[in-house]
Image (cartoon, rainbow, N blue to C red):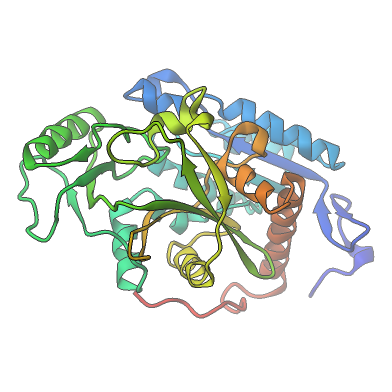
Length: 363
């Protein structure tokens, strides 16, 4: 049965607006060590994980909620059992340097029966197989570029693919290795690129047709309703060759000077984003990178189920884009926490096989 207001455990706070907030929150972040990563570039994408977790923790403390932070390592289960947070914010992007192992964090939290933010086991697993996700989007009517997965650089190039082609690590996000060499104009360049990426990162490579055009970023926040915020990247004018977001744009100290965001609006694209969110099994929030070509056709390039999370001051896309729309990071946190508490209450109120859900998409 639902818990009455006077029966709520002491760890749950009732706010003035009637929303239930947990008394203690845990923030879980990536345990980052240089030796975990094959390259400095991949390490850079996560090296500030603890700093960012502490910044978010300070914001939550100002909301009147107790908070602890935990590295996502082998001691996590023990620490959670001792401290017993009512809810956890999962910021883990990799475990021991492997992004696909981040799916073990929601798995652990499910076992410990601790509510958590972000994608579950399925969504976290799908996110780190870009080829599988692109195929799933394509089968469900979401436009994506023509693509092929390579596990060996000698594999035959499919005849329908047309140059220029861009090569991406299939299991790593953060724009790692997206640079001037990522786009190949002929097969010789492609083979050289594939050989380097496969030998260095020991994983398959997703090769896509490069879509010339404008670049859109979509942020979806889930609550009672899904709300989509769109922004177009406006690049500086000093670029030669192909224009796209590179690793340096995202991670260089002066990368913020290379482009800025402006609002973009298209209801059809918003509906695509909502559908893609469900197909990818995301929860709470998600991020999509999209291209629009000269004919106005959209192509979904990348999907992040638990994208970098933080205020605009951290130069994070989510914070910067929501700020364009007048949505503060504190408001995002409140919405995220309320959504997680509501979902946890639903699990308590209904047997596991009778929780009301929206219809599942068919694959």
